Length: 71
Image (cartoon, rainbow, N blue to C red; front, side, top):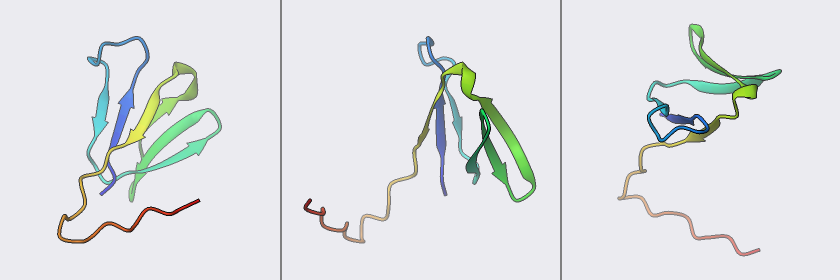
């Protein structure tokens, strides 16, 4: 399940917002829009200068990770 961390500029972490719901992220014009099967649920305007980072849960440790690709 994708999880998202939204960090607002200038804050000391107190304004950070974590979304733990199963939402998808789309961009429309100057907006970042989080939606689920019912439609949009949270939107952030680009003008705020926020950073959006996907922070998923760690994968199952029993499955080996793929080898790094050489360039």
